[in-house]
Image 1 (cartoon, helix red, strand yellow):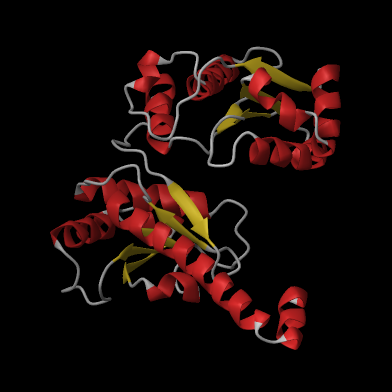
Image 2: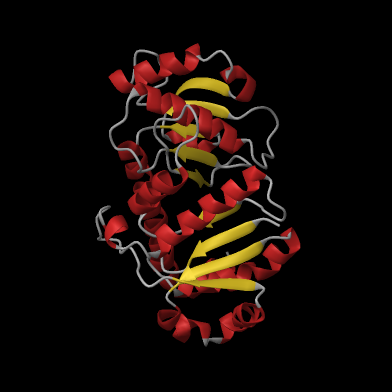
Length: 291
């Protein structure tokens, strides 16, 4: 049985949003045959666990169907990476350690062992560092990247990698991101054909981009096996992300994070504009609520 390990303390709206999400996910996890382990400070979560929304989750914890592992510390969003060593019992550290141990047991073929996945909405830098310390890197990958899937006109959305793990990248890092992004985009893919991969640039022509993107493009084009896992489109402009013209967009973490935060701000602004416009007309408000 696969195991999902969840950091209850990580995120802007933790622990409430995390615990409510865990409660909502219980039926889906049961249907998928997966177990759930929660990591957090139980005393700080009691108020949320006492709500009606978490009643089924509490019952599952009390019966042992859901495990609860106590974490006395938490990596706060304004903490530095050094906090990983200063707070060894932080939820992020415990989660990465548990996931790493589960994979080691599974690889050894121990009876009943299954690989676990660890999820945290907390400090992304600490999460990345702790994962590297406890799990290591995949062979051949120098830098891990953070990937997000943005909703687009495509059935599968668009995977953007990296969105914040590495603000200063070498061409080899972007090449690796292209490979990892292509493989990630293949999971549960609904669209026909292989994923379309592009390097984010200020134009489609080969003469566009900067030294980093031009060198990275040459490296991806030189990969002998890349055509077996994806279609390399060369450069991709930002507008193509949401039009569904590309399935994976590769960039360094500085650019990717700017793209991600810009999209988040745009979404909030559009909703605010629609609400303000709807308030001026009762019929428009009714239509907005229905929409």
